[in-house]
Length: 269
Image (cartoon, rainbow, N blue to C red; front, top):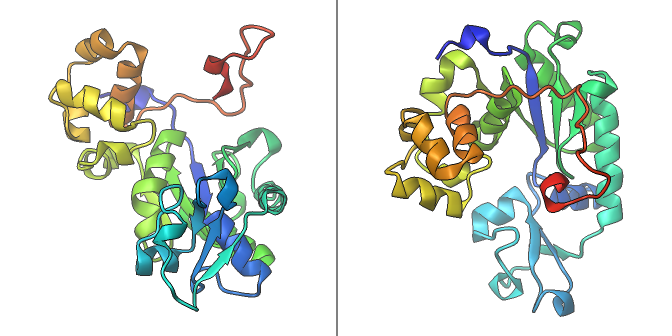
């Protein structure tokens, strides 16, 4: 793969670690990484109560999982905080966090990706804030921590998809909560991934379709026939092949062109 022809930038994908539970912990004067807390939905609306978020310790000690575990899975432990969700508070904190990000990038280089994740294009600004992109990531982490008491994880890449995989696969499991993937490290960082569903955009159904093509790892995907992938899976097959090679030509500062005035399912994402 000739990466010289691919876009090279500095992208951060920043996730607020255990966001709902962390916000609730800080609101109670607790350390998000040391508190044992779950955010539980109302029982009457979710057939007995669904755990929407868990603090890292609650997940580690009890094996509780967000959007999977229910009230019946809660242990009888007085140390465990069980709190209701407050979406207005989480939205407010998300806005405050993204306002902090605007100290490091222009508005057009910031993309709030979800309630707890944002993509930052620091290609043109990172040198203003540190000696390396990693140093800038640490500075952003400190700024958010000091201002809001929240911990953030950062994936760094030459494009958004590399940053996303670095975040999901590596950053959440490192001491400094930072992970990096670059074009030259794709064989070492992306290809060894065996759990395809851990990779952004590959769900269980897609993984099963790939398995029928004898593709079980990211190495298999990168070395599959791209024309066969397109024939079997359409444009998604092409996109998956590109992801396996760490390729993403997205330009965040170019607004999306809506094809029609109405909003359909294909346009929501």
